[in-house]
Image (cartoon, rainbow, N blue to C red):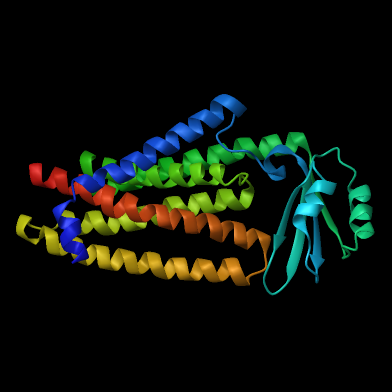
Length: 277
């Protein structure tokens, strides 16, 4: 039933990932015009200090944010709970730790500092890494298919994945950090996996086999996606590690974005090209 509806309106579904891409580009372009960067940067990429405390009691985050307005505050939940406080590089971490002690938030603190110059260097390397990863992926795709149209359609889906994920992070006010960069690089790889699965299947299909080949690819691809979502949710709610939570959350967004980008966008454009060809 669902597949019949999908088959009947497959040309209309093309507009969903296209709209996602256009909205994402508009959000990131607005960020670039207003702030000079497509995403706000964490202390690792801009310079600052991170204070981490393991806690065994509940923390009133709103009250803590009122007390430390210049800080970015997060609490991780899982096997162990941690309080993470990010402040500018010139902030007095000793005074902050004393303030935490005054409101009965105690624990063995760990302080990590990244200077502004080092943060700017990391930011430049981050941009190079993203560009290099996308370029290598594009070269691999063109070598694999050796045809301009299917390769370009795969790249369009991957671009939709990465830009829509970044736009979603911007809307959620999540800053770009090294763990998030790692997750974005993994999203590029995951997107190519599902797109290659689909493209390889359809390129080998005859016209009368195309619908069945597409149905089989969708079943396989969605099974991959939903098992990945289940694994990522377990990491988010059980790990208790802020870094792992960040990576898993960004990957979760990317996997969910990849579903319409691949099975509505890539499948539709590729099918349109094959039928006209």
